[in-house]
Image (tube, rainbow, N blue to C red; front, side):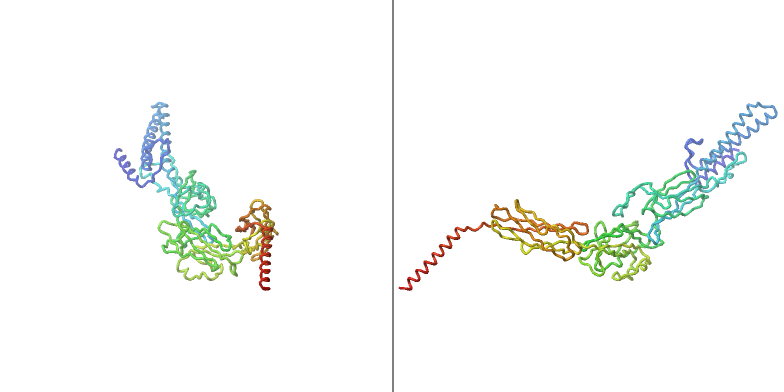
Length: 518
């Protein structure tokens, strides 16, 4: 008997490395040291021996009681001890096998569909471990009804969902994700998928649409009444062999002579280490463009993904011409494409040509359709024949201003006003021009009246202009009219001087006549 027990003990210890580790329930009969399946298996064997011993004692007590040789109390005590041993054995069996079921994440792969939408393919597996044949350890279920281990390790009522993870530092990201991070929020479509049952070793693959584009998330698992969250980095599906491209901006407005900037996000779905070319299609040649690194502002013509980098951010900046033509029309959407493409395909494309939409969509590369709306700009120019006048005290200044729209968009409500020195007045006719088309001009009369007691010196009158174009204020430049005020002429002195000159001339004439007569 002692030899057999030693053999069973050694067999249980040898089986320990192949058994799945699991935590014992708190308050268990085996105590905190029973934290592996091997230890619980040894405990089960001990209770099996105790059960057999209790059964033998119960059988002897019953035999003596039936023969009238033993007291009833002794038989009842042995029966109670036997029943308690049965309960202890069944509890140990449940502790050994009921805690073993486990659901693991085999893979979580992020991929992109042809329409640009992002999906995650999650594979889960019942990794509950090998079902043990406890009869090899000398354990028998002849005296207790043991449950089916396969049923106990089977996972049922499984639900899987994707949640947003807490903020994870990403050194490759130039800007934030845009939307606020809400840890624990469900970001999958559907919110959860249901699996009725998974047997030991069985796995199931589920597809989820991403409501928010992320590189890491939390996979929420619920099975057998247990709830777990596993935070994972998403693998990228390299089967497409492309770099995907998306844009935070889809359609932008820009003034002629101005700029438009699109923030682009590139994500790697390839194992290739070759660089990818950056180019635009169906963009008029009059519009210059640059792909820029957003931090340093360096110009990019190709992009490469170093080891460990799966996403990058860059900027596409467009520079609009000052004038319109047949390809760049005002207020009309101008669709074009931005592409990140391998060098071989890029060499077969000509950015100066216009390609059909269907042909571009058929290209196997990362691409995004963008739109630009050129807007005209209203600009006001105010000019005058001269912005310097000389007047004498008591005189006024009158000048004609030419107000012209030198921009490319109609301008409304052009208001002309002056900023005058103290006690000076200005009368403007008309003070408001209702509308000026591009290259149209209007004459505005300005009469400046100094005060009657104005002193001699230089004065400055500022001419201000404001206008509205496309519901926006048109930037204008102030003009300054310089006025020099001189003293009025002295009439008496002038008359005296004239009289003196007349007398002088008359005297010379008289003296000349006298000389002639002699």
